[in-house]
Length: 499
Ligand SMILES: Nc1ncnc2c1ncn2[C@@H]1O[C@H](COP(=O)(O)OP(=O)(O)OP(=O)(O)O)[C@@H](O)[C@H]1O
Ligand SMILES: *[C@@H]1O[C@H](CO)[C@@H](O)[C@H](O)[C@H]1NC(C)=O
Ligand SMILES: *[C@@H]1O[C@H](CO)[C@@H](O)[C@H](O)[C@H]1NC(C)=O
Ligand SMILES: *[C@@H]1O[C@H](CO)[C@@H](O)[C@H](O)[C@H]1NC(C)=O
Ligand SMILES: *[C@@H]1O[C@H](CO)[C@@H](O)[C@H](O)[C@H]1NC(C)=O
Image (cartoon, rainbow, N blue to C red):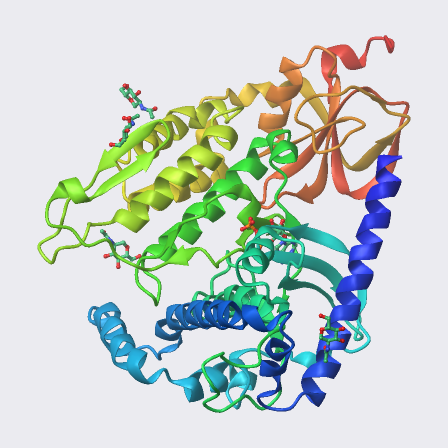
């Protein structure tokens, strides 16, 4: 049975994860400063020493490169909005020569930790791992309940991942590779700190291997062989499932994405591009979209001399953007994000089953993002406009008010002995449950379904505040229900039940 095999494998992996966290906690508290050089000394053959030394040198070089990537992200914001990016760049160049280990240690391990995020290694004591939420090239994500009962997601180095595998092949040094791959987690921690937004997964804390830091340690970097990131728990985005959901939910994902991209275009780090832009980089938390994979976020601008230097290449489409007076491609990061949102999200989620009164606005968004004619501000405006119309029911203006007059309403009532029929896409598997703005819209829908003879406004609401309406063929009797209203089609109500 494949399901059994999977869960066994998951259990084995989990056991490994939990063990390795505990072991690393133990090791790191016992390990002495500088001890990690020792495992290099047990070389296989004397003749290989030179080769090992050069491998080690190459690995240390890589470790330093990764660190240099992170340091500019650590610098405090310099009030001055426009000069910020340049200043950051400038300072990072100054730091390169001295590589500020103290700053690094302070941020990842030391005194500022409590300020940066709340939970530390002690929160992980006695936690219960539930299941694996996902894994990728670099990271493994585990669903756990902390001792206090709080559900969180933990991100760790994926020991079986491609990143780790490649590194081991190149450098043959498990401890060094773990450290190298951990830099991606460290970068993510820093980015999650700097890019706080409702549509970015919330960082709850982290646990870094060594306590107390390593001061200015000898080139190999901090003791951070093990890093565990503690995150808000989400559900991996399931595109297939989303494709079968109501338009309202699919619209929400797209709107959230646009709100995120709007924020990223003017983030504290400058205009940020998501270089690896795929649905698997996102999760949902109570239906809200959140970015969870930030290690491929980049605030770098592309330098140019002419606009020929500013091309955005996609599989089916290339774009050329202007080269600004200060020699950078204008809006390149922002436009890259918009087009990726169009090709990975909008094309699948947005047009299909859009409410009739909104299709022209949806089509306009599809065209302006697919052609990169709109910037992110205009795109956000267009989305918020649709949301406003949809919430207020203004897009339904041309429905005749008379439709609801064909129905008898019974307030404070529900139904039982229902004969349901199915519709698509329904909020319920058993029957036909759709969101409506008002009884008028529900009556209009009921009229368009040949099986429908009555509907109930349940009192439940969707995320936009629209009402959930349950449509059915017939029911046997009414029952008191303070929150709901039953509408019965007058003409057919008199007929004998047909089903
Ligand atoms: N907070 C979370 N809650 C639930 N699931 C999560 C969370 N964070 C990540 N995941 C899941 O774990 C998977 C792996 O995480 P992540 O994308 O950070 O790893 P990665 O190694 O960088 O992956 P990739 O190879 O896609 O770059 C994600 O695709 C996502 O489905
Ligand atoms: C060194 O390696 C050999 C095999 O290559 C092994 O038998 C030995 O236990 C190792 N020594 C240490 C101290 O790890
Ligand atoms: C995009 O540009 C690349 C490189 O210039 C070229 O090879 C490719 O054919 C172009 N694609 C399209 C769809 O124009
Ligand atoms: C946008 O509209 C133009 C004109 O109708 C059309 O030629 C083009 O293919 C559309 N582009 C997209 C991406 O929908
Ligand atoms: C986009 O909107 C922001 C405010 O949300 C504003 O600061 C910025 O100047 C706008 N950009 C453009 C190009 O209009």
